[in-house]
Image (cartoon, rainbow over all chains, first blue to last red):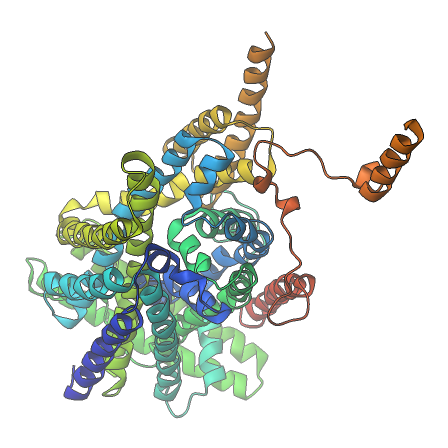
Length: 562
Length: 75
């Protein structure tokens, strides 16, 4: 980090916190704190929704995903536009008309109190745990790459978010999300232009792209049907649609964003805008990763991108072996670079047979480099059971090759990405805690000011909980992974309950509640005993809830008749 | 009296429209039926909701075609 980077990072960070506090300074009542008096225009709603979904991990891990595995990850988002249309037709006008503060309030009106409480508790448990992880994950990457203390990073991000989210509520969160998202996308765009500029003078952008494509990094779509593979067209379209329906329709961190819309029309347009631009945006971030890969075909990459683990391997008991592997990797890189240039030369000469032969050489050199890298990973496995450097690829490139000032901008973008999703989560957790638990179950008749203060305190509570969880998340090991998967284990069930509410009006509360339990059992069975790709859990969960609730409804009806 | 009642019933039926078009009786919770939600409010941009929905779905279809062509071109 050079002085100019520090200036950009600190100025951006302080500016966004001050902006959040300033925007939320006039929050005087509960309605303002929870839904900003329904005052947001559609473009605010749209960008706030997108900023909430895109965490720091999205911007760190997604380019790394393209670097290691290609662009097929984009297919996960193919169902999202369909879900946006469905939700614009159903959930958004409904929530606005009912004037609810949380999605779970609707469940009591439609079914009963126990179903509402089940939905609220599911959300609190899942989001409460995952918010700690979403604070921890970028902090660990920033601390490793930048050499900063992880506790300090967690405190800085957590403290800043707590300040403006607890003072200004949804108004502060939505306004900062809007600004943060613009800066994040600006940072990504600048990074992309830098990569293109850093390509060797004798290699054009299109030629570098063709090399990346030849090595399998531009595989954006795959129409083969395989339920054990989540990165194909069908999993993305069907499973991704169910996931997006559940996330945007039943997760309060998203529902709260569009409830703050000025009207149902503004909220619907915000969601539809998300449906229009989300897939191209993900494509762009993945393409950025593919271009980092193309860049490293002409500039030697490290054998492993996590600098801490790399140094540990270099100084560990197998250091001589690791050094030899690094030399082999350098030789494989030189061979690969020669083959890449030969391929480009053949393309320029329009010589198809030479291009075919150079492309075969290129792939063979890539396989050789991959083999050497696998050996290096084996050495690292001695002290790290699950070595994975995907999340470090992009930040490694940024810190090593981007010019002064722009490193600060991209780091600020990573901070903002983490802050925007965290702020939305804490705000939503506070809303659910106060509206669905405290006000509904414990203290029903207190005044507006009482609930406003409770909401602010609840935001601080969830902030402290997340910071504390993040401090120890590194020691929890596999639990972190488990929490990450937890969301996909419960979203299908939540979606099933809401689908019953929206579309099947004969189903009563007890049938929905028991159907939800059956749906959850089915998802857990799939998780433990099948190889089904996780995107399909959402489909299974939702369908089993709907089917089981109908069967139980029949039995309840028969019992009543008898 | 009977004629007046008959006239009243008839006018009520005419006002309600044909049977197949009439609303179903309210269920467990009226607001839970998406069909009963007014959707007249026009979108702030884009003319009509139908046009916007079509734009989102056609955009998705166009993106899938472009991704396919992109994958093929750089394979």
